[in-house]
Length: 535
Image 1: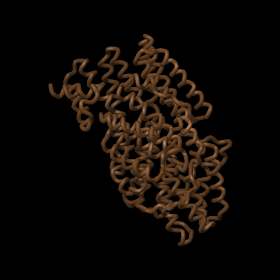
Image 2: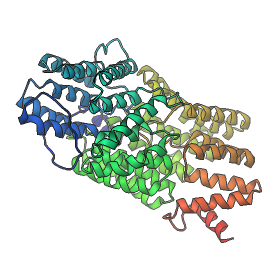
Image 3: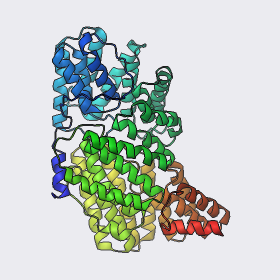
């Protein structure tokens, strides 16, 4: 079997979006996108639009290719192809040059095809903003330009629900993660809710409600869409996965597990390796939060076994290749850190791939594990590797991921300081990491940080015999990431050590509820919760 680093490198040089021609019948919801193309291509066009709204980009491109082959002058099909070639709009990673050049070429073909209506020409002009001047305008600038173009298009064609949907996506994708008013997300979500009430079987409207509200403060607004989306488009692997974004935000772990089991299986059948890995990462996260460690362990092994499937003939879905690299690194790291297995974390295999923010996950876990064991040399080496990842990301102009890895390095350095006996320095650095993490948002590629910075701060305070301060930080962590195992167990322990037995009993009871399907005897924290309940 080839090494993981070799396989990941191969995966990441594949064409990001295959130009497949396969047609896939199935239940994908109902999309009615008015267009001027001939009657003979309408079925393929509608099929492609349904796939596009569920981010099944490879099958969507296949359907649109069939349209263009039958009717080369159908410029709106080329518009849709160019949009699909952009990939998941909620991935903050910088698109590779080949992907941008391919999308740009398709947008130029769309312009040249001679769309038959002004509305269609406006759509084509809007998507071109994602690719035009890519040599001189950065990705964030082009995304804002596309958002503005879609705003104008949606205002011009007020009765066009499709224009509103794609505008909503652009609005959320270009939103500033530091804007905690969530004005753009609320605006987009309200637009989609109005349309969804009138068109309950449209896959995009439900899908984009979930994305619009995929932040802790807004997640409760997405529950109805999350409960419904998988039923609208059950043959789309991403539609089966996407509800877990809301379930994860709210700590509905079994719901997340159940829908990701379906998503991973659908992705496997469709040959979408990255989508399967993405669903598996969310599934592992939910198993660990609910104390189902044995089930999580099986998936750690399964993720490693996926290497045997090779790196060819991968169909493009919602998850880009970088998501596959991320999941490969995150799954074993989560399994070690969430269970407090510091020795396993400290000896994780750290890999050199083309995705620096994925590589950083292993180094972060190694740094935390080694520091908790007092292995200063290993921890210091891991922190040095995190700085190298930051340097790589800065060179690659990966602004979002640069900050995320900086936060990881800061947290890892904090625990290293504690291991070296510099407790005050460690607390100060950990507090800064928590504050910085609170000012940003997690990317859709991950269900959550490997170890939330504020949760790590609370654990550090607890270790330093400051249980009241620790409990306050655990509460803040739980407000943002509800029903996390380590936060609940840590808060219960902090309350107990602070002499607040009533609060401790309530938190232990909540932990037992969250872990109703947890392993028996399970982790020591679960045993402590059961003991507290018995008393």
